[in-house]
Length: 112
Image (cartoon, rainbow, N blue to C red):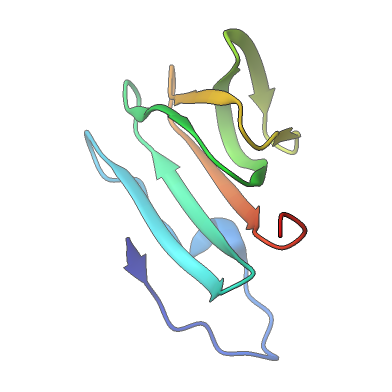
């Protein structure tokens, strides 16, 4: 995971802080705290994240392109501007049938 320094209290364009890399998934951490984190991710065509189950809810927002997010075996196709909440304790897979960028927000509080 690649951490970057983003200046606080200064506006930026999220889609411009991360670039596509051929045959890769690139992740840049925007905020990392004990209660959760926010990251920007760029997926090249044919790449993805393998099946996992997170103990926390994840908010995924597509900021460029089109993604396939599979939650408990059901495919959801999201376009730029669309979002989905991946519930805690559910299996999920993220696929790039074409390249896309997304913001991933994980909230760790509320599960104590």
